[in-house]
Length: 460
Image (cartoon, rainbow, N blue to C red; front, side):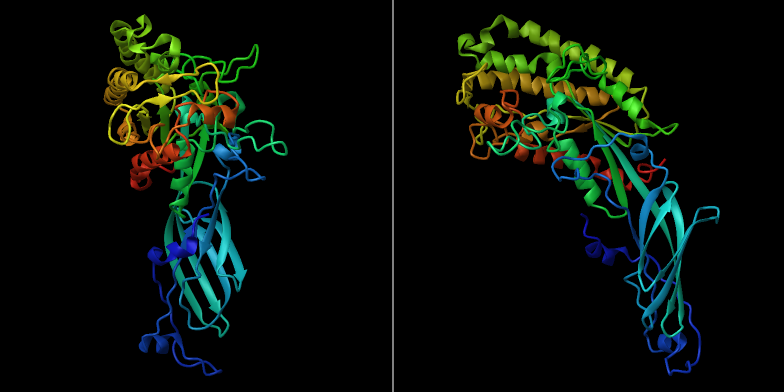
């Protein structure tokens, strides 16, 4: 939870003084006399919006909600706080009134001896708050302050990086625990530990005056064609069932209670599966296909065609589909690079701890080839797409993972054996682990930080 008390001091908002004269019958010094002695009463009004991204009742996973009342609430709870006020004597009654921009009363409460109150307002935006404080000795002190309610809608779509593959919400815990990993969404291997979800939580906890509404439909294995703009079976398919395109899912969710809510920040991680990144990893890891860079599946012309298709067909296709949504800012994230060690040398990636479909290793020579012919070209295509389509780049991710590969002590990737133990298959291999997702979170948070003060986002 946000530390509200720690943030009150810099939030001194307005001083409005009302004083009487003389001395009351009980000998109390009047407000005017106190003011003359430099002991002025001061009203300080602050406000807090409760956090909306919450854990489930058992505290295990994020309680993702996509129902209309969550996406577009009929009322917004706010706590008004006058506890930092300086009064001539103890407060007895606090009378709070909230006005809209036209002077209409939107909420009114009265508290006996309590310096905070909870109100519910029908919309986000600016309000005028007044408080009348009657003290035990009969003094009346009033104050007024404008407040602005903001809630930021952040949505995450994309592939296994966005979904948090390799990091189940709860891994298996032995014979007395859950028999298998627990996911936010098993069909998509979607986890609360994913960088986008953690970034949304971080942003919400950074500011008590605003809240964040967040949901994710990211799905491991998704590409633009099969997942974002087209249907997809999911990471763990259900026979005869296809998931709707993620953009269709988002469009349906944000159209809540007869209103299409604008998305303040749309986070996207996609492109690696469109060029066959997972297949290349499997090819390089398979001891039967060493060295993988000489295989016909990855000859230069084929890779060039894959990158060209991503740049000239799939990203434009994505842009066309996104135009159906009301999005204030779209953010495309770079991909992590598992190929370089802490000396920026090619990493020998060992994958042979547990046996299985991709038992083997990626040699240093193959890692060097992958760095120059797969990872960096993918980063460049992602960067160009942001310029071409008016998106914003979440950068520093590719280079930020240098020195944190599986051959490093400060490893930010899920190792093969770890994936087999933690999620009962090898699908998490070479995906960011929780440490990697913390860095991913920090890069997203840094990119979204200006949104909190742009004066446009956060209300509609």
